[in-house]
Length: 104
Figure 1 (cartoon, rainbow, N blue to C red):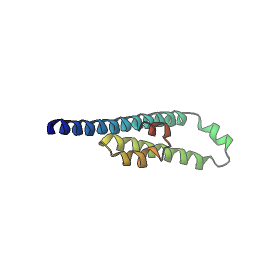
Figure 2: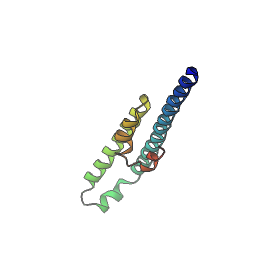
Figure 3: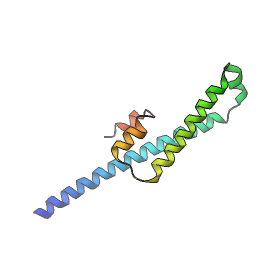
Figure 4: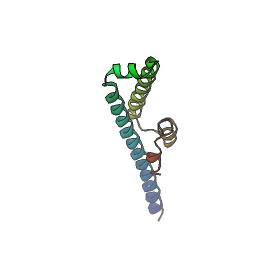
């Protein structure tokens, strides 16, 4: 009987770890999508931005900084498994991934 209890606890532990890994994968996929979209926006004609905004440099710099930050987060999330707290606080919240956060 003790073996059944131990097996049940191990199974619950493994299911919990699997759920966290799925959460990490979903966040990684969302970051990849964000980076692709941002890179796609940078391939546009800069002259359009220059003509629309009297201070285009600040907007371009902010977009570039956001892209660099997203790429860094993407590299970080791919390095190793993260805890649920790290995933939520360091990735989901800053990028407002509310729909991804609802899997729990």
